[in-house]
Image (cartoon, rainbow, N blue to C red):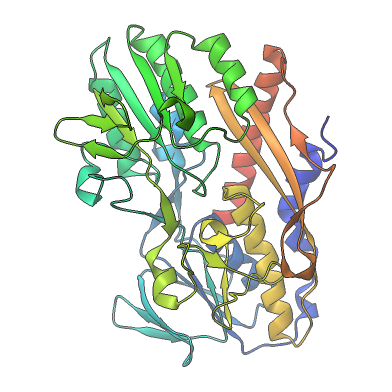
Length: 420
């Protein structure tokens, strides 16, 4: 049993609404947020609510945001990409200015952000929520030119559409090969939800086909529950190979459509290569990424430990054991916004508790989940022992279907809160 109920966690999505704007006296603050995904959009909207007289600027070049959560259902044919796309233009907060440009450089001494349209913004506090970039070349042969032949689809949008088109075009009897990356990366259980839904697609539409998952790891989030579902639903359509079982892909050839491990070469009709990842490039430009490629932060304020007055949230931040997920990014956006409002108003930051719930579909109408709770006292993240848990093993279809419905409710709530 889980000690934290789904209801209490979903209600926690709106926690920032209980913080009165009157608590924050600073009226002339200049706050810049880079990245309009689940973390950045939430942070900007929360700050505009908390500090209605401040100047909050949200920078992102896109008119819309394509959500990675639920995008695996596009691959299985159970959801459209249109349903994954959310406008970033509407704005009901007078203090929030939406700037459609790319942040190209950051001067942490002058506290300025230079933009791709030749403009620049000054800030008192900067929040970066840039997401991830792929580590091109980490797998020999897999670079930016390889993604047409071997899409990663780990940034939702055109890559999702391309992978889906390749699945549709594959003959019945073809082989799909997926490469799962080493940790850390965006959405720890994501490759295995994708494997489940691709396997469902093959089972129902191309039953003579098969998916082989080549994994750089020996274990993964919700592993027992996923493998239980695979044994029940896809025994003839999904094969998972761990690193111990020669699953680590070291080289690919997009022209030959092959993936090589230490001892074997796999020929794919469709290849989905999910490469190792790092914080997006602007993190390096800002000087907030360390030698790991990710961004170390103070867990209470999310302020970079490398650069003052710059905060990092979402997938780019080092927040383990809190996972890189949309739920985490959304909550981090709210908590960071509250702490930034406190700092700009001359108030001391306060430790809090954070939670994460991650739903994963094992079939279009069935899901499993994991819940975690975390403390950030002392400036570091710690898992709260005895809180949270995972879905029960051996549950009947009704339980899994109820979790799928809860996942849909969560997605509706979080997208409404993040994007309006």
